[in-house]
Length: 199
Image 1 (cartoon, rainbow, N blue to C red):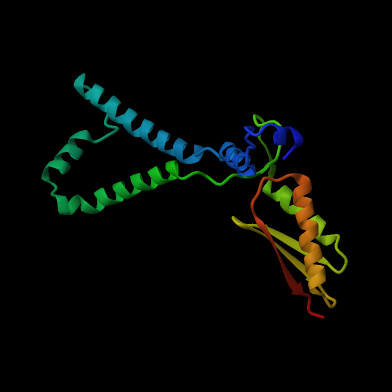
Image 2: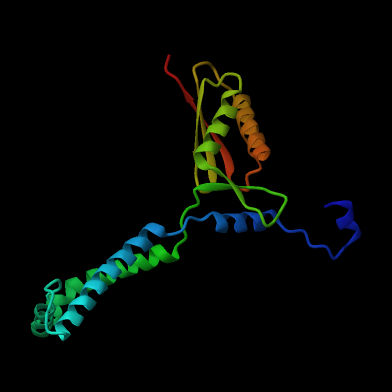
């Protein structure tokens, strides 16, 4: 808390998680591929059906959609015969609704900024490369790999010599410092794993 905030007791300090939530919401990818597929399928199907109905009303059916055959099939079919098709269509509709409702996974990791109206992100691959380079600077680490998970950042270091817990703690500290230096808005815990190379 700054001196000004100490002097003004009514001042509300925005928590770090508020910025993380706002940035994550802004960086979520749009559902463009499922939306475009559904829009294309609906536009094609409904457009062809409309053209067929209008042409049939004018006395010159186009023959694109077998409307009469579909009406006859629906008239002589019973529910058990159409049950599988109806369930498949209902399942496809439910899947599309879930895709529309459930937010996508952000491709960028939010980075802290001073301006609350600006949202900046770093690519996940860029953050992995940055953290891998930081881990490889520690003495005794020959190679490192980084995996970004939902709740953890998993750093796997490879060494051929004798390693100690001190080296692993040092890798964790260096990776944590690099995360703080980049300014990522993340609540992930850094987990360091050791893999010894066979002699």
